[in-house]
Image (cartoon, rainbow, N blue to C red; front, side):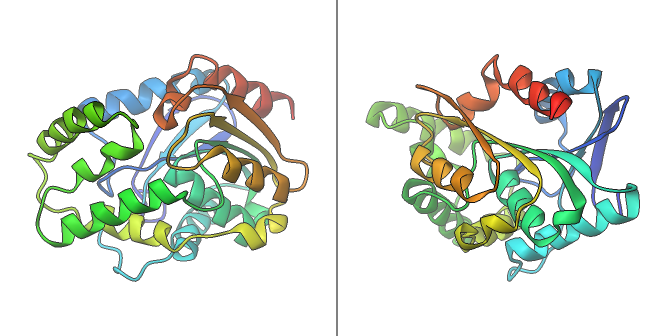
Length: 253
């Protein structure tokens, strides 16, 4: 545990703190762990990568600022000086809040598939997820509309996502963090971020649309935006250009 936060570490070199969204507030296991470590493997050649997660059992009233404070305290007690950070999707929302609230703790910040607030489709899907979970229904089918705009694709995906929930009955931790993001809007505080910042965004991201990504970058002093035309939300992180682009920024800025 890193000051009470579950984490995974790999690689050698200076610290790179990685923030991701996971449905469970715990280190990923099985296929999820393999996928996570595969994604960060290119970064382990240059950094000691720490994939840090939130603690379980947070109050239902937890905000993004509360989450950011937890990660900030872990960074303060674990590392000497500011750290480099890679943050994706909802993890990017937390990282933006952390960088604004605790600018002395973040040196360089790479964001993937995120923005200063959710777009309307992302907000609707996450609210439906929360409502389904609170009613005791499998929540993941609500996320189908943020993956594809195809009606047929959504129907097929809802079935697969319904099956993916079969081994998990308690979605409380996921609801807590998604509810925190529902109220997240850092648009008026982006100027507080002092870290050198790169945002990599898919041109067809339905969760955080490109106009919000542009607004985010325009609000952060000196920030840069890289767009992958035609790429979806999740397609941004799996694009073969993602790790090289992120590493080029982290190792030369």
